[in-house]
Length: 332
Length: 259
Image: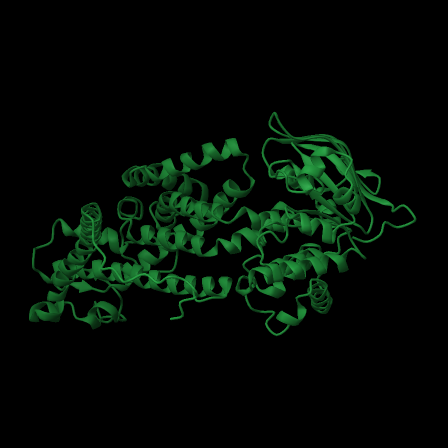
């Protein structure tokens, strides 16, 4: 190296002071504790998964269970009664157990669909109102109130759906079945609106004020600004809110158990009673013989529920990454 | 510094005894200032002197701040901008704004410029494309981005983003352009480009620019207004403000004795 006209220093070996050493040790201990805490959470999740999967696995390993509840019996139409076309029937406690998953899938799909169709527009519109249009005072009341709704125990919501909503809908529309997919779906919507609202509102509020100013300064109205600038900028967060709401809706048990009628009917009519996957687990787990094929079957339903949410999460996060990449132009 | 024109310029925009308040705190006190048509007026002064607040009041961006209020009048072509019959959206289409921090939307380059046109009701795709090209040329950005109009605006460099914001403001063809420290976050080369651009733009627009940079004010503006503690201390041709100010405070500030 050139001396650049300066006096060079001779190399000196570094020496660690005791204060620096203590500081380093303290940092390591703290980092270790935090890491352990984080991995405790992950470990709990993995252990739950392993346990459920283990119980469900018996279904495929045990010869008796394999015969009674094979995959084809679960997912393909079966001849239930002589001289009738094959059908999907869930009747696991019977001389000849019938274990078709299809009625339960349809039940879960119907209640979840109703709840999402109601809760997503309400939750997102509510969040948009709170974030963009509500006067500050109102907003300070609105947000905690809706969040309070999230704190209502689901059994209370279920009770409300069972006693009030069901009666009201039947009286108003003259429905033949009092407890059905619509009642359960509306009850579920009550549970997931606060989730969607809160997360969406956070996403909308996090959109920089400079976007709004830029839009308004270009002569856009507040509504155009909210719809064309703020909402697209918050789209990944709003999607996350919907996925969270979906996860809650598909897994929510008490409301569906109380308000859906619990009849495993295969039909696309939303005013028929339905039996959801989660409610099936809750209703039947108490009376099942431990280790029986039926027992394993219930755990298998749990695994399926987990898979549904997992796949949806994956799809959503892939989409979010793509959107973010497009928005920022870089591989964010 | 262009020589002041022989014929006095028409006043495009004018504040009369304008006071601006945040709650009960007075940010701007009884300022009377005129922006002559097709000239650049620089607003200078130390931080917190109210020059940005004043600028933002000219297209009523301060309306967005809770608790902000005004006294006095602002006239655009002789009409009060606070009149009941003036629509604030129309006003902002006539008086555009470029912000201190470049704030392109998280959309494509094309969509950023087209946005103002679309909300303004322009539907025809060819018209929009033509205006986007014209605006990007006006913002001296066309050559750099013409091959990647569909890339995200956030992939541009800081200086390019700011010129995109200028192009975006030009697209709606405002009459007055307000610039709030448009080059404060940029490097010297990008700054020079923006200043060059301001020179070209004043042929078609009336410009008011807030700046902390004395040299920049001297380079780009025809007239300079010196704000101090919410008051307008002095306003006149830039040459006079920088070489022969009437007020001692102005002289101290422009020569760097405080600020």
